[in-house]
Image 1: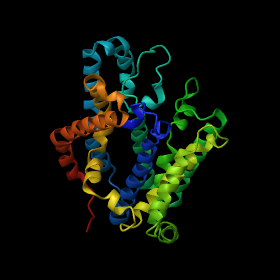
Image 2: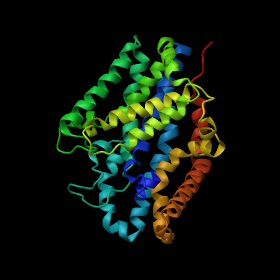
Image 3: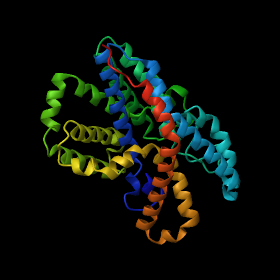
Image 4: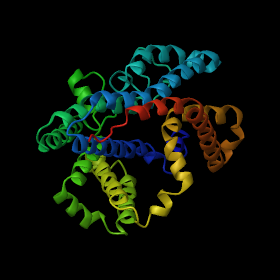
Length: 341
C-alpha cells in the first residue's frame, strides 16, 4: 500500500490489492473466532465481541481523524486544497460510511483534495462487523451463513457486471451503492472459515492445500492472478477470481504450520510488522508526507523513497502501538471469549 500510494511505477497497478488480501484474512479470522466460541460455549457473546472490536479499532482510528484535522489546519497547501473537503467528509469518516458517501477522486460540490482516502476500507470492515456476527450467532443451521455470503458475492458480481466495475458509485439508489460496497474478499474469507470448520470439507481442503508445496504454489497463482491486466475480456470478474486466488493462498498458508513458506512468513520482523500493521495502514499517509516534505531528495531513487516512507511509517505505528494502542489492548483482553465449564 505504501508503494502504491508513492505512485511508483513497478507494480503500481496492483498495489491496492493488498487491501483485498487483508479483507480475505479478516473475514477468515473473525469467522473462525466466532465459530470456535460458538462450538466451545454453545453461544456467542456479541457484547464482548463488539467491546473487543471497539477497543482494537476505534482508539487509533479516531486519533488518526484528529491528526488529519490538525495537519489540514497547519499545513498551508492543505488549508487551501484539502481542509474544506476534509471537514465536509468528516461526518462520513466519523460514522464509518465513507465508502457510501465520499468519492475518493474528490468530485462533486467539494472537489478539493480528499484526505484519508483509505477510510473506505475501514468503513467496509465495520459494516461487515455490524451484521455478520449476528448471523453466525443466531443461525440454527450452518447452511444459513454460507448461503448468505454466497448470495452477497453473487449479487455484488451481478451489480458490477451490469454497471461495469466501479470502485465508487455515484448517482445510484442507496441499496445499489450499499450492495456494491460489500467486499467479495471478506465473503471469501468467511466461506473459507466454514470450509475449515466442517470435518468433511476440511478433509477435501487438506488434500488440495495440505501439501508442503501447496503454499508456494497457491501464493504463486495468487500473484499471477493479480498481475493479469485489467483491460482484458475478464476484467468484469477480475475481483472475483483475484479474491478466490487469495482465499486459496490463505488456505494453503494456514491449514498446516510446516509448509515451505513458513520461514518467510513466521520470522520475527514479519510477525512484528503484523502486530503494528493496523497502525501502519492508518498512519502511512503521515509517513508519505514526511518523506515528501523533508526527504524529497529520495524521489530520485524510488527504492530509497520507499524505504524512507516505510521506515517512517513503522516508527509512527510503533510509537502508537507501544504508547497508546497497548492501553486499549490490555482492556480488550478482559473481554476475550473463554470456554465455559
